[in-house]
Length: 152
Image (tube, rainbow, N blue to C red; front, side, top):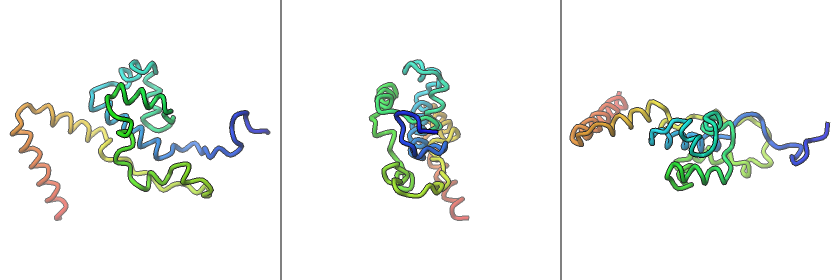
């Protein structure tokens, strides 16, 4: 069967999201959650369904340049925000860098702990504490507990 028009016979698509797309989607989710937007509210602002936002956030669908531009405006961040904190092993999964490499499966992708719901909820709860002194004490407590756990 001949390849579909407009596509190369070997497009490199495996059905597995590229880790870069997952990272960018995670950054969209991070910013959306920090702003308190639902997927539906973000979708409405972009003229999309919440299902499309879900696909972007999972990396299942790539975010095109014009859509990324719109997202940066709606979420009030520079476009570079979506690529911030990308680890080198993820950046190495760029299609350009993978060109000519065999179709070996990529290393398992470890999600960014900063993009986890638990982390986002913790940060939002932290900033809802009205007293800055109490917030500071909680911050110091968390650091002390982390250091005690690392020492064990």
